[in-house]
Image (cartoon, rainbow, N blue to C red; front, side):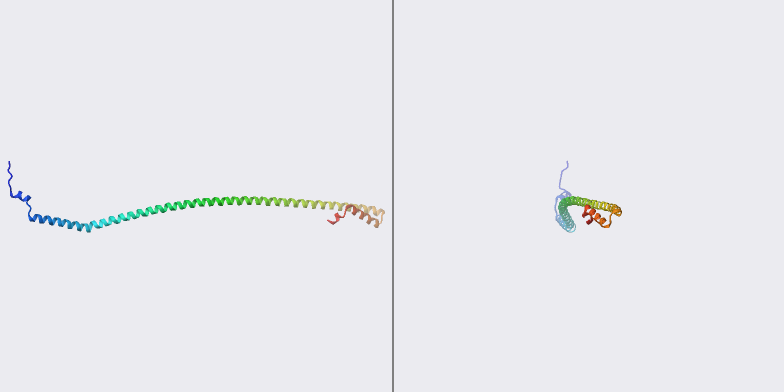
Length: 180
């Protein structure tokens, strides 16, 4: 077996000297300085960039939420407007139908009135034609009677008797015939 004795290389391994402590302190100080410099130079801008990005994402999410709420509100508003427009269109259509029915009844009433006037005018014209025909027949009868009387009278009666016969014939036919 080997006996462990203190050798100079082993003793130095666990021996702390001032140089080792100074190097360790300087290394720790350099690490802290490097950490603070790196923190200031790299970590703070990276942290700031991440915070800015987080704020931007938060604001975009808030804007998106507000836009969604606004879109929902606008959708409701447009749907209510569409319902109102549908109601208004239905009202306009029913009003137009009612006006059409009223116009139809007015046109039918006017046509019936016009037909009644035409019938009345036709009856009046027929009555006038009938009266004219009656007058015409009476004139023809008077003309024929006059011709016959003229022939009879020419043969036997003078003009005074002839005038008397004409007057009697006219009285028999009636005065209304000559007035119309």
